[in-house]
Length: 148
Image (tube, rainbow, N blue to C red; front, side, top):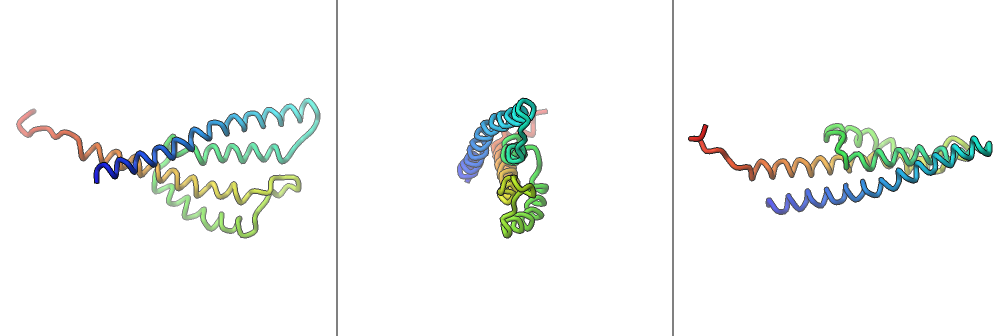
């Protein structure tokens, strides 16, 4: 039982760490797109709603996908987020929601899908941490009653 719990915690850790490492590259992409937006706007007088919105998408994805790697929040809060997000995301998928801007990105429903994914990854990381803490408690040496 102990080794299965440890293996489960390790599997969750590897999954969350792999996603976190992948998101590091997304941060580079966000910086490059932001740089392109600034250069296009101020050097060439060209604005792009699509590029501007992609920065918002990238930033949201970075936070939602990498938060579990840094373990910013707790399990009950993740349950509340998932509970309220699922109908919100379902409505967005029903209409394949897109940007309100005519030249904006057509993937608002995908962006909103990151909300329950975020809650799931955070909850999984919390479970891994709880398993690891339980394992430490189960294997911790006990002090003898006669030693003070």
